Amino acid sequence: MYTKIQVVFDAADPEKLAEFWALALDYLIEPPPEDFVSWEAFARSAGIPEEEFGDVAARIDPAGEGPRLYFQRVPEGKTAKNRVHLDVRVAGREVRGEERKRLVSEKVEELVQAGGSIAWANETVRGNSIVMRDPEGNEFCVS
Image 1 (cartoon, rainbow, N blue to C red):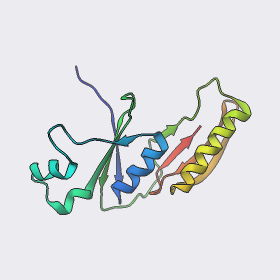
Image 2: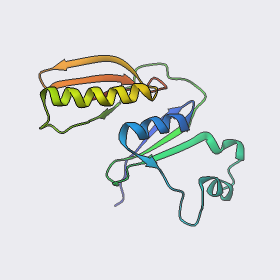
Image 3: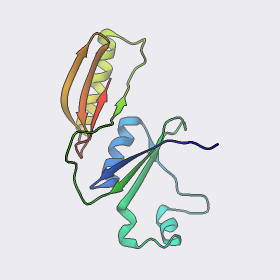
Image 4: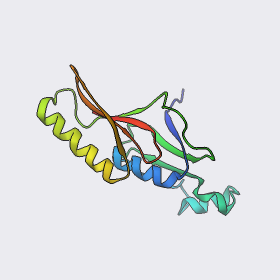
């Protein structure tokens, strides 16, 4: 049985959003299928019109452990809070206190510089996390 997970993002600018999430998760541009030197060559062979070449983008986990991220252009913008979101975990459960806060703060700053924004902070018994928005307003947590 073949079961894989792909996380799909609707986007106004698929490539820009893909770049943000590649930075957030240390993902890479997905290479084109075998026998193709580029995604454009693949698209041409599949009969995709050239004006649609930028309508999708994909990023992958270099270790092959995380899900593929797929970004697709849609005409409408985001209108409500996400019902599902990603958590960007910068440290394992064993990292606590000031060290965890430092790692979270560093990642948050990196993502703000890349176009993300801070929505709010959560301080709980289990630790702290920062709720952020990506460049298109999708909520996610850094913990």
